[in-house]
Image: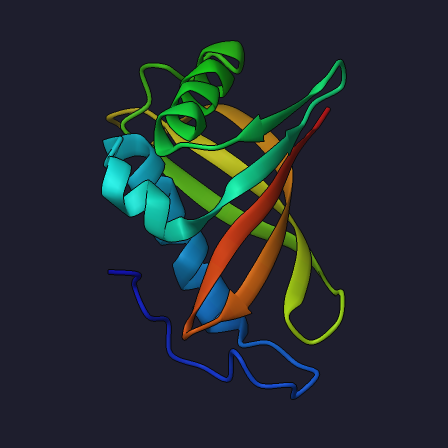
Length: 140
């Protein structure tokens, strides 16, 4: 069952709940780190789209989402991280139901020191009391 984030989501108010969005991102970091397939399904609007520098990939299953997540953490040198912390960099509302956001992910070791970081942009759909990832685009 999708996790519900309290706030004014799903209604055409022209604004979003920053606290709910921050909570969703923290939860997304935990879900991707735990590799819980059911939880990934609840947070992604599959099929979703991964847009890379060289090619785009349609993500049709939670397994594909996790493979890309693992590949990303290896590429950033963060495969030994024990925590992933999101920092919301920017938010642009694209209509009442869509948000185009940029997130800086900080990978931390067992001493809470940052070992790597990466930036991604996401197109999120809000509704049904939660957010769902529709598009992922890493930022170099």
